[in-house]
Image 1 (cartoon, helix red, strand yellow):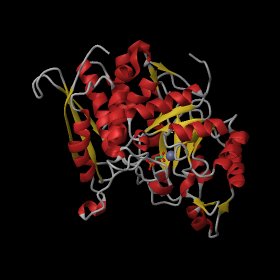
Image 2 (spheres, helix red, strand yellow):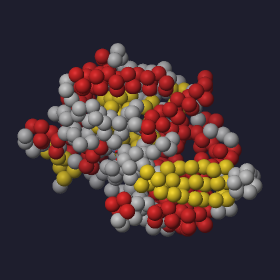
Image 3 (cartoon, helix red, strand yellow):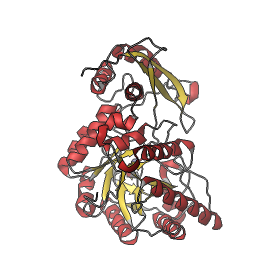
Image 4 (tube, protein in one colour):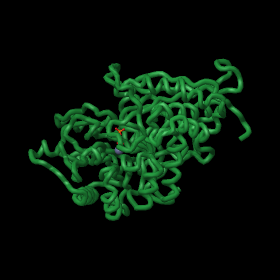
Length: 440
Ligand code: PGA
Ligand code: ZN
């Protein structure tokens, strides 16, 4: 590496995320000259999950009186103090080395000493600073000249589970504009369906209050009813379900898991009886849903501990549907490697804060792609105006992104950034159905 762009300053502060919880904002300033004069400053705000996987890297919270224990001043201090010292003067263009130094400063497997939120803050802000200093867009800095694949949105329009206060047990119901010609048109189709769904729910006297990711959260009897409303909204908006628009689900089944079984609290209330299913029954249930609805992707269909169940599910359903490991893999190459060897799932969700550094998240994408697994870059339910993941999805050519409903500024920020990227790429932008192989 010839060019040397030293890190001059690292600074963090506590800011708020979309749920009104504190989170870490980090600034990394680089430059050959004097700080503040001809330096470039990169920024990052760290997201936060609600249905977090058990094996995620540790998000350091203060656990004191401020913000009911959710403050992040310790993580901020760790950045301003330890992490800053370990990377000052280092070449920002050497992202892997910076991430290694940050990890070494922590020294633990799950980044529990200084906090994954602290490490990731420096890691992402360093990449942003590097892109700015080189005066190239972030997606191009991260992905080089091969970065031209626009992702198909997996747009969440109905929320349940831990992301809402309603009776829907599955966490997310999403639409994918697989038949669109480009990202912009795909986004438009999804937004029109979202508005149509709102109209339909309102006309039936159902709630149109939104969940954490901007999807509607009415009290419905269960998944079938939610999916039926989706089919109706797609059709009434003038699109073809299954052809132009496919469906994706995030079950977040780890949240339903109790003593080796899957318990449906919302459906139990609505049907006035205890609804509980074994792993086998869950798989059969998905099989039924796949028959009836144009579902192309199921995320966390079974619990993060249930490797055996995942293997069975992949055997039975893996040839006809994308099976995404979120809590199962937690963006961790060790867990992904195990999944690849056991043939558990066929896709991985990529959430940078699950693993806590940019290089490790990128490694997980590369490992997935090499093994023929799909990778989907994803937001968290607690987000911010930071748009890093939009650039990351294009840089890594994942072809799919999960970033919520077209509602709430922290979600639209990512969509708007993708519109900007597509515009910038012009004729070079490519958009394609990720479920049809080799369609260029
Ligand atoms: P989380 O949810 O950010 O609350 O973990 C998102 C997801 O499960 O995909
Ligand atoms: Zn998930």
